[in-house]
Length: 338
Image (cartoon, helix red, strand yellow):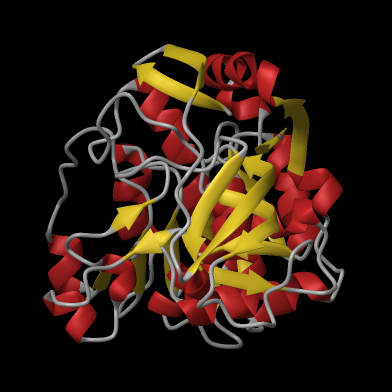
């Protein structure tokens, strides 16, 4: 069977790989839709600290059950559409012991620390599957990226009536915006692309700021009665937005970081102490985040067609990834049909 491989930074190839072995508790999946993730782009660029090469990317999956091992429960049936929880935790480290396997010390994510789903067939344990009778395969492949934003909002303890500033309206940022809006927060979306800001409004942002041409601090002060947003969530991953999140958040506020900054970040730590800030990291997602996103998408309110920028074949996946690398601001989500 065929698979897309990122061989090294800037280089991909289509290769033939062996079909996966299927254990007693495994389900063999026919991969139908794979979303390219920002992690895949970082791997292609050579700036993903968690990956080794060569690597088959892909963990945003919409699949159909091809067959099942003898120990798989009967409610998983051949021909059923499913999505995959792509993280594998050790169960023993301090994070796992605290019920936070999403940040397991030895986490193994499909397409990152182990080969992913940008291939024709994939075998996974049945307890990593989620089903929905309402979601299309395209929507199923959107669940995992949206859970990242949902988990960040949970980490930030966002509550109804609070103001939340969100840096970045790409695939991760729109998950943050959706989750915060669902909780009844007032969302201020911040980006440098008008098209992405328009999408943020469709998803639930009440205010948008194009920080490339508008004065961010003055606008945030105006929108928050000179207090600053109660919560700032960073979904860009550059030093400027890492610092701005701390500088713009309110006194006694919370800052949540999702992405990895590509360079070391220097801070004036006075902001941390004087404002008594909570600085929080957010990594991956929990089962409860997957269930929440599935329920949200099942309402039909999410603008799926607007979020998926383009859909390509496996043959064209390499070119699509290279095009995204060349013009990242023009892409929200690329889906690959296999």
